[in-house]
Image 1 (tube, rainbow, N blue to C red):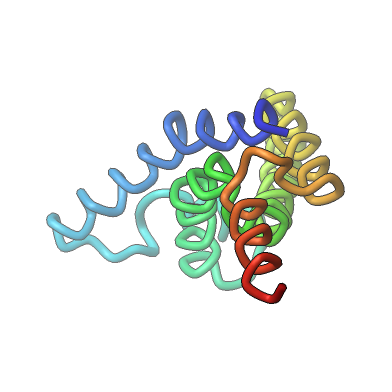
Image 2: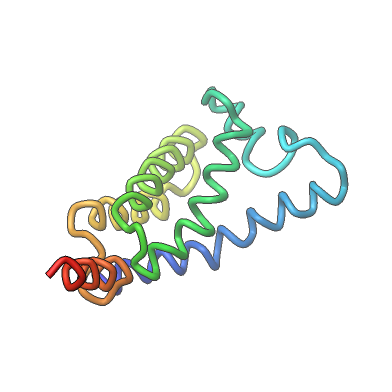
Length: 135
């Protein structure tokens, strides 16, 4: 599980930081969020509320992915990331781009939904402390 959660850290470092940079630059340039990052692509694909989805994806692939790497709120965030990766897979296939990376992340996060974070995680540590406090 630790290795699967490590994929979350790779996602955060490779894609999440990049997306945060897009919004940070746009904020300083005074550009509307609807014209930067993933929002135009999301709108082109026909998904609803493109700005909100773009911000959700940015959160998923940065903070959410980092939390998964730490094993914090793993199943909840893995569900959110799997949904995002399903959208990325759909978009990649529709645009006839390389879809393999999105498919691999979808499989990884789906596996984490089913298995949970594993023993070496904050979720496990918090569960153990809660059990000890109730005893």
